[in-house]
Length: 578
Figure 1 (cartoon, one colour):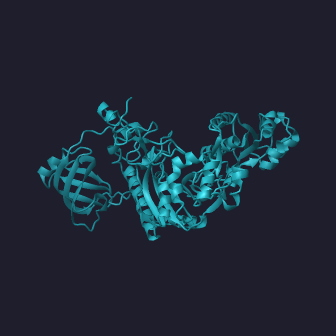
Figure 2 (spheres, rainbow, N blue to C red; figure 1 turned 45 degrees about the vertical axis):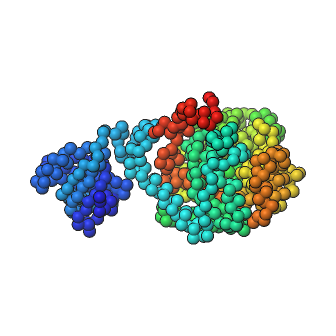
Figure 3 (cartoon, rainbow, N blue to C red; figure 1 turned 180 degrees about the vertical axis):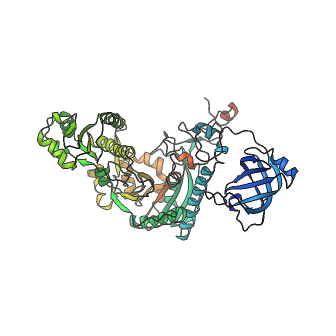
């Protein structure tokens, strides 16, 4: 029905037939100008009353979002628009068909529209017509295509894994699916293809990849969805360095081809403990400085109980310094409330005024030596603000790590045009689950401990480090993975450390332990969050902007009103009763 797409018309095209939506139309005397839009862009179409009255009269009936077919001659525009690729040409219409009419949309179909997000999501098919939204979905497609091409060239096979699997609740909450045939039993939707891709390595496929849907029934945030997409990888006969090198080259090619941005490899590698000590985060944004300063030694004998009490309880006192930012009391009070959302009891502060004098709510409780020590350790200069948190280490890191980002945003310290990659490595293998009073896997139960830390599983499991690695971009984790356990005895030991009895381990993971009896290659892999990667590459504020039909924070999909109810017949077939 068409010879060209709207955004691809050039002066070299003599005659064209176009299809699309009417974006705008205006009449100027005996001329009607229509902006015709499709996914490739917009082109101007001109209808002339002196040329063909029948076509002109039909053009007078056009309204926004009518779907039309236009034939015409290409000519240069008398008033060029250099902001669009087709801005120097126009179509002089010689034919017009109205293919479909439209009611007035509930919001304007234009870029950067200032419309309530719930309304946009209710009419998502209209929201997706907007050029900026279409460009984001197109860029997401380019990421997926390049991933398939790159990993194919590197010997990976795309192999599908099941969507209906056995529930093995070790991590986030599963979505469960009742079985009609096996009454009283349930499938789960996969949180990841982890076990299946490891079994593919046992099967000898050597290198696997898949662009795959995963599901987690968890509370949502701006960068999370109940269903999300991974670029999922696994490979045999590799170590951590090999996995990292292969993926650095993937990211280098991705940013060069899709964004025309050159990123330098190799990326910085930062051990987990160093990342926490310096930035209070295992996914630090390193586009700006403002590192944490440990004041514990300076203040360990302080009579100020807020500090000494935290230290005596095994915690610490740490600070960040906002350089050249002498904060006022109103802002300091706001930041105090901010850190409380991260479990901190409060925020201590010292402002070094331009004249060198100190303004603070805590210096009266400290000795001159302690105040001098704080100034010396932080290297604070006139005009700086020192922000201090004292508590258990996990609280201090969480509060100051997030406060660091908040201060950087408020003072515009982040270069939004910069892409900063780094690997965080040597994660703790385990973390203590206080609610269940047992250890839980930091990544998952199939991550291998570092060789030199295997013996710690018996003596000090909390100190064992993992062969795990996360790839971080601008303070967001975009992917992560590990070298896996491939020894059945070590895997059984890991289950034991996690508090699983032999019977429980066999019930949940017996098929894996059985497979490990038949020759397992060393293997490892990782997965990228495709949605989050696309969000960062398009500079979007929400992950919802790069998903065609996303869900909101209640896990509802507003357009179709999912989830919905089902009738009693369907429930009876499944052996269920509400």
